[in-house]
Length: 127
Image 1 (tube, rainbow, N blue to C red):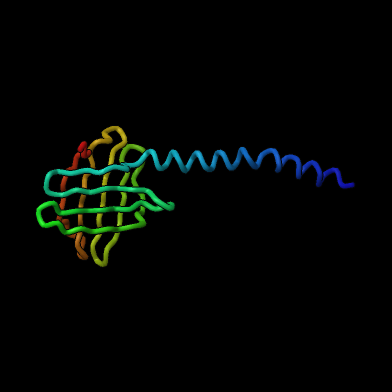
Image 2: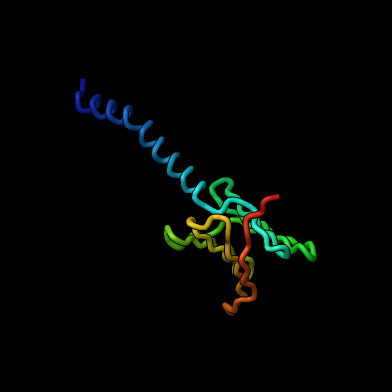
C-alpha cells in the first residue's frame, strides 16, 4: 500500500470541490460586474448580454429599424472603466462602462481607418 498516493488522493478529493467553487464563483462575479442590460438614447438602443462565455452586442437604430448582432467581445480596461470591443469586418464597436456609474454606457464605432463615426452616451432603459 502506497501511503503517499493515498494521502495525495485524499487531499485532491477534499480540495477539488473548493477549487471548483472558486472557479464558478469567479465566473459569476465577472458576469454580474458588466453592463448586462439595454441602454438607449432615443435614437439608438444597445443590449449587452453574456451567454456561453461570450458577450453579445445587439444594436438597433430606432429611426430606421436597422439591427446588428455581434458576439465575442474582447474585454479591456481596468476595474474603474471596462471596454468591450467587437469587430464587424473593418468596423470596430466599443462599449465603455464604469461600474461606479452602471446606468450609462458610451458606444463608439470606428471605421477601417480608425476614424470615429459614432460616439453616443446611452442610458439604462427602464421600460
